[in-house]
Image (cartoon, rainbow, N blue to C red):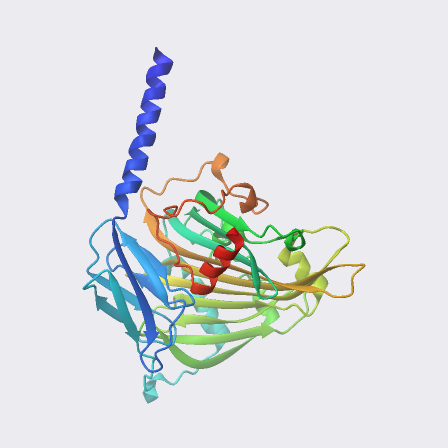
Length: 404
């Protein structure tokens, strides 16, 4: 009898969780963001509900969908190169125009100084500018694989990431866990790709470069680069230092080219752009690959990242991450290599409270594959209760073709 009572209690708890999810994000707003001058769609625009923790980004077509557990009256839109925009929500479908930034820089805003010193000062302010308490964030993740110009797989997931305070560098016990996922893959025999690349939902831990400083912001790697101060730019109506960096010395591992965008007043890292130096294919492959068959030749072409951080009342957190990986593969007996492109994209959509650590049994590891954990695209309401990145038109067509 005792076991039966326990089972009933567990079932009731599960039912209440499902009910909560179904009644959670019942308020939805859709829309399209376009350039006010050209009328073209604007991709990768951050869309958020002011005063709440719900957020998303626009897709390649400039469209978005955002959901909330409360009525949405105002939305804020921000993107590098555009003026920060707030719009009142009058209906469930919006048309938003964003104005390209054309701020005249006053003479007092002309930037001088040593870029390396500015960078060091910004690193020293990470403790003040980023969370000093553990956080539990929910994010939407999408991974697409293209063979030449044709999509051959699409993976999607909603996941959680547990982050310890930013003053604990090298990411400590930060962990990710799946909540929900799905996959669709080409059934053509020749579309099989026998390689495993670094990435997946663990990108939220591995490539949070302000937290995992093993990648770039550490005393060993910083002197390996040269730094140049470029013309300032605006992000979310705030003037940014723009520091370009490139390899200045050789290392046993591949280095990066890229840019740091640093708020001029707070020295907060707003955006980091990285591009792996792939001139030495063997070095680059060690960073990009988890495993491959011995007889398969892997030729790296590109691995690049964009990492955005969102400032909320003087405290910033990871907001958006996009990685692009291009490579060519062939079996050693063939002379022609096939081009592949993998795009990983994630957006932090919610802050979960309380910030409970992710149990070890739920952790998604860098060696895990979404293929093994995700069901096929079948349920049209699969993402009904989650914020996602709206699929672009080309991706929707690709999914339709892959289902056939």
